[in-house]
Length: 366
Ligand code: BGC
View 1 (cartoon, rainbow, N blue to C red):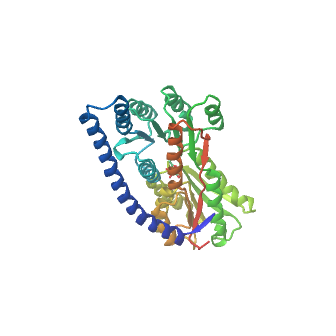
View 2: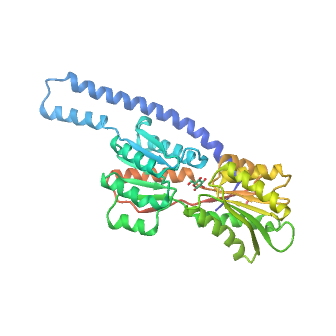
View 3: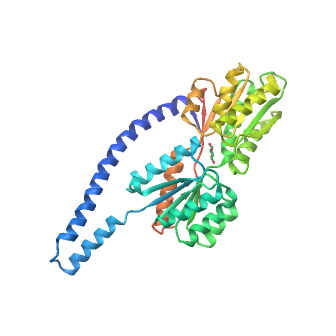
């Protein structure tokens, strides 16, 4: 799928208007819900001369309304623009689609510390959450986190950080109430490769018959990093394009690192740098700044691509400062993750994996 930047922009704008309307509906619903609880409690304490069955019904209703569902959300670190978007959408979805109160959604950030994340999971279970959404600090520790939840019989949906095939298989064999909602990093990488192929001279600005590129990677342990890196380049070579890797280095998904690493690469390799591939948009935004400061011009002598579809990057695509990006559909992922968790909480069967498609965003109207 390929969307032009104009189309994405229109959707972003219209989404905001809708959100305002939705917020008003949620407020009305919250007031109605609160009034309902109050009414039920009052009935229970004032009606003393009721029959047993009447009393039971009233008590059951009181219990139903009072035992509100609590949800825990665990995110690897706070300072990540993409994860902020997905977290916000998750909360919206629990509130708007499942009537969970904002106060009953607890969000913890682990600041990239696995032990801290495990403690947070424990704390949330003690607080009585009925389900957890976890973005694991380390993908290799997903089995330990899944076991931690299974021990207390708390359903969990992992987002973003990817479990192995064996782990998903284990959930289904051992009937662990767990699932993963994420994306296919190979698709994101392939779209980045296509964006480069569609750019002037398919990135071979100096006409030497070879595309010389700089790869700025995310967290080196993440499956997304490996897949996006491999498939962006593979898409070029599959089309018979000769490539030369000037450098490949991790910027840990961070904007400031994206900028620093681009500055270093431009200083070291100068005009030889024709393409900069960033595993995410935060780093592409940093790279874009460094490119402009170095007096290089995207679309004329350099090509720059990212992944995520952050609003700031989509604006930069529109303005011609980034060649293109790939929408990492945070809205779709959040909505699906909330839906799957609520199904698990209700004891329904779910798959062990749900993949949400990426969308290519280019500035050339394709
Ligand atoms: C996103 C990055 C984000 C990372 C966090 C990736 O899917 O593209 O922007 O930093 O997830 O794990």
